[in-house]
Image (cartoon, rainbow, N blue to C red; front, side, top):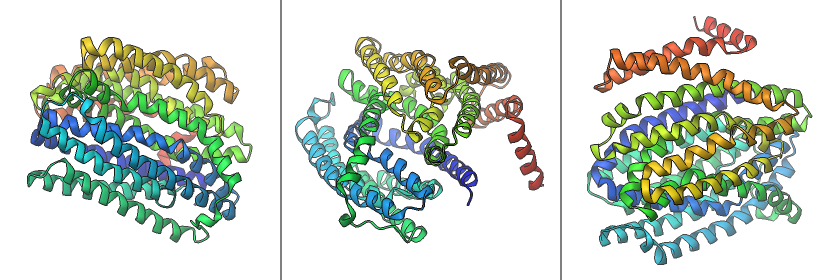
Length: 502
C-alpha cells in the first residue's frame, strides 16, 4: 500500500478508535462515579495518575523505536530493525523491573500522603496501586514486541487492538462494579486485558513481517547508544507532557482533596480526548515524516505541515468553541450535581487547548526529522509557568485555579515561542505560520459561536435529544466554511470520493 494511502487509513482508524473510546467514556464515567462516589472515584484517578509518573522510566525509548524502525523500514533493512528490537527488549526488561519496584515502594511508604479521609479507602487504593506495579512492569516488558506496529506504519492495527481491549475490559468492569467488587478487581481486569493485547500485537507483527526477530542475542552496544541518544530529548519531552497533562488531579489530591481531583477529572479527560483526536493524525504522521526526511523531500514536509496546521486549526477552534458554549448543559445532563464545577474547568481549559492542538502537527514533524529538542525547550517554559501558577492558585481557587494554570501558559508559548522554532526548522516565516493557523481557526470560532448561541436560545438543550440536535445543526453549519478552507486539490479528492460513493 502507498505511503499516503496507509497514512489516511491510519488516521481514520485512529479517529474511529477515539470515537469509540469517547462513547465508552461517556457512559462509563457517570456509571463509576455514581457507583463509587466522588471520593472513591478520586482515589481511582489518583492511582492512575501515579502510574503515569512511572511511565517516565520509558526515557523516550518509544519515540526512538518509532523513529529508527520507520527509517530502516523505508530501506527494507530488517537486520537493522532486528537489532533495534533486540536491544530495546533488553533495555525494557530493566525498565520494567525498576518500575515494579518503584511503584510498589511508593504504594507502601508514600500513599498515605494523599488526603483521603477514609482509612479503608486508603488501604483499598494502596492494594490497587501495588497490583498496578505488575501491570506497569508487563507493559514495559512487552512493549517492543507487542506495541511497535505503529513504527511499521500499521497504526490501524494498533487502534483496532486497543478498541477491542477497551470494549471487553469496560464490559467486564461494569459487571464487577454491579456485582459489588472494588478497585483491586478492576485493576486485575486491566492487567489481564493489557497482556492479551500485547500478545496479539506481537503475533500480528510476526505475520506481517516474517523477517522480524526479537532475540536478545541481536542486541548491540552501538544500537543502544543510538536509541538512547535520541531518547534523551524524548525523555525530557515525556516528563514535560506528564507534568502538563497528568499532574492536575495529582496536585489537587495533594493540595485540596481526592473529591476535588475526581470533580476535575472529567474536564481534564475531555481535553485529553480532543488532544487524542488530533493525535490520530499526529502519531501516524511521524513515521511518514521520517520516511520523507530520509529521501530529502523537505518541500513535501513543509507542504504537509502548513496544510495540516490549517486544517487542524479550523477543527480545534470549532471543537473548543463548542466546549465553551455547551460545557454547562453537557455536565448538567451527564454527571451528578456535585460535579457542576467541572463545567467551568472545561471552559477555561478549552481556551488553551484551542491554541495547543494545532501544534501537534508540528510535534510530529519535529520528531520525524529529529529536531524534537525544540519541543523540549518550549515545554520547559510551559511546565515552569504551570507549576508556579498551580502552587499560587490551587490552594485558593481549587479546580478553577488548576484550569487557569493549564490554559495560560499554552496561550502564551504556543502563539510565540513554538511557531518561531517551527519557522527556524522548516525555513518558513514566523508570520506565515501564525497567520495560517489563525486564518483558519478564527472563522471556525466565529461561526461556531454565532450558530451555537442561536441554537441555545431557540432550542435550549434540556435533554439528550435536544442536546444532540444542537450539536448536529451547529456542526452542519460549520461544515460549510470548513469545506471552503480545504485546498483545491484536496477538495477535488473529496468531491471525487463523494461522487464514487453515489
